[in-house]
Length: 295
Image 1 (cartoon, rainbow, N blue to C red):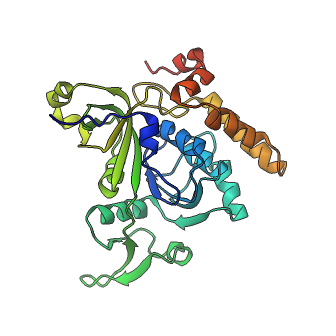
Image 2 (spheres, helix red, strand yellow):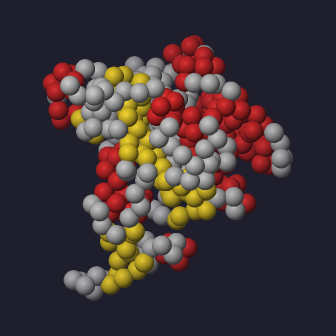
């Protein structure tokens, strides 16, 4: 008998410890693993190196505001189109509160692919002729021995844990995404992978159309209906723009007023006080959640 990989959120959070390197899947207007993000904040896990694939979303700002992030590897952090630059990300960089591993999106994926293939590095064209190698000493420019053209050597960095959100999985970790192409790179590079899903389905449903399976054998599956809130989960619900706008306004006001407790109060209210995912959903409210349904 195969063993089920479905576990509860607290057991999944036990995978993550202080000082680890974690990678977080998702991209603009797509699913982000917010159930696990809230748990990291609630447990006050700190000194994390965080990798995002494309530009990170507000989940990165939340982690920064809560003091969980030491180093960030990313091409940028937005607020789901409601702010071009996440305010917590911007102010943390301006104040030197976190270390930034400067990259573009292609560099991040090259780093993950190198780790997945067990290589020390992979070459990449992007960034050649720019200031990126100057601000990121981990990237080494070299001459291609075949063509003689300059390339960047992008070092492999393997996440200890990849954290993803997807549409479906069976009990054995066979995951089906909607628009989750980038999450595969995180899964392949990471030592372990946690996937929170909107719905656990039968293995028969997975085998009925194997082409939909994006990840085979994730280490942990967490049931998480509305688990991407306040971000979207394609074909399930849209992003909660009201919540994200309130976060952006609160963060901007707190930083402009130099020490205002507004942002700390926001993090406490939505990320620390709710003891689990269900408490959080009750805090948001059924009317607000149902208003986000995508038809």
